[in-house]
Image (cartoon, rainbow, N blue to C red; front, top):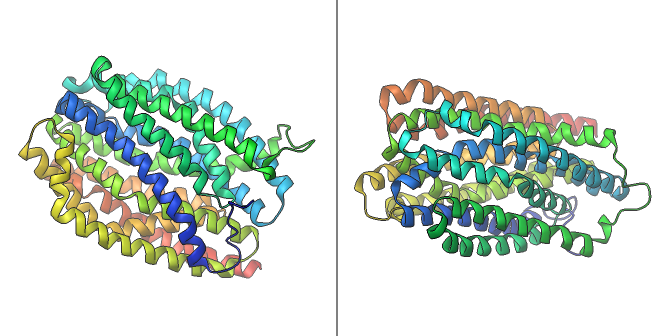
Length: 444
């Protein structure tokens, strides 16, 4: 247990910083190789291929986000049992999370592969980028079992306070992915980077699984703990499905917005793709702070220490706001220049509109920090349904922009979709968080 961090005692800010740094580095590597995929496609295959990949972003977010959220949710009862020092029950949850993920891998992969063509048609994907979008999307969906494997392994060890081990395997995955991108892009076109992502995720997940089995004595299954238990599966799904659906519900708004942007033409799609890829990379710290909040909240609720929640929340928000100022200082002057990474030749139109997207979004990063931190803290405390409700508000805001304002005001309105969603979610989340903390203190 030397690698684990018990967040139920000691300084919250120090525990959070120790935990969040490896997690942040892991997120950066993950987004780096995702961004490199897009950079290589744009540089080697041109802006049409770039738009093909960009048009699939919201669909990938919906499906892969469902898998990520489910695995993250499975970590909540594991972190709560770890915080309570009930290691036998913790192992039962780990075993049943494996059985559940196997079933989900079969169901989700089969369903999305069947519906892939219908989804792209429903999104009004421009004809000149349709074939590339279908190829890229269908290959990534074939890799869903590997996505579940790696993220489940990561979720289990993070629930015990170890954010370093997933980082090591993510670094291996990132480097392998970049190498395969460069090797496969010329002979296979847009399919090359897609296969590179699937292969690298598979290698990372398998290595992480074998390492866990060898190094973590606390996870070694004892007699009677390895059986399938529908009681444990039910509790896992009660946390995992709401967390996964939160991503998917949020993504529905993004899909509606992407459909509206598709109607503006492939050049606007390419500009937004470049802006979104840069923004997602710069948002990695907010994701890391959110995942840290989930582990911190889960461990302290499991240990019956709700009195520590506010202290952890203050530290997390302070770190988030400091980073938001740093991101603004970089993206306001240099966001347009960064978008050139995605172009095989200079395009002033794409650069200008990608920069506009970045300037508008970075202006509201403090609101995004609050969304991630508060939502994941609430989930870690066991209130996943409320987190889904926040996702519903995000969906409504993005959908409203997509259905109404893009038609009226064009591309600038699309750039305001994310900030609108963050405002809507924050209003609900702040109220919910204050009520939950008060309720948990009364329980104790």
